Image 1 (cartoon, rainbow, N blue to C red):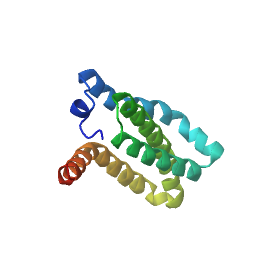
Image 2 (image 1 turned 120 degrees about the vertical axis):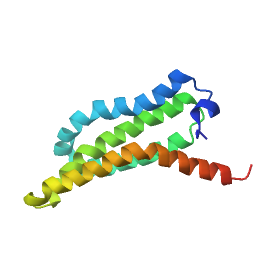
Image 3 (image 1 turned 60 degrees about the vertical axis):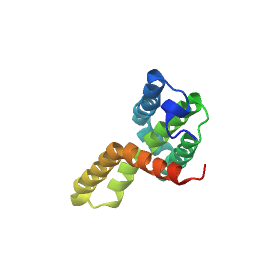
Length: 136
């Protein structure tokens, strides 16, 4: 299990940078076209697909036996996030009346930003607590 890639997977500094960068590259490059895909295939369908891809790749990331698998799982996570973000905001705007859309979008982006900043720390704490309580 890849709870500490540097030690568990013998990843050097370059490998650790790819673990982080793979997610950012995938989400950043794919997010641009997802809005159009949402128009073509349906926003709800893409949101569900993004949640499934993100969830499954999160599991794959946790169980990654090698650095290559871990980086591939991070690319898949980024792809899932790229599906979730634009169509999620679009659906959010559709369900709120016009006078509340700005506030709803602000809350969603604020929560998303907080989750992005805090997520790795919470993930590490949860992983550490599960790893330290597991029988050896």
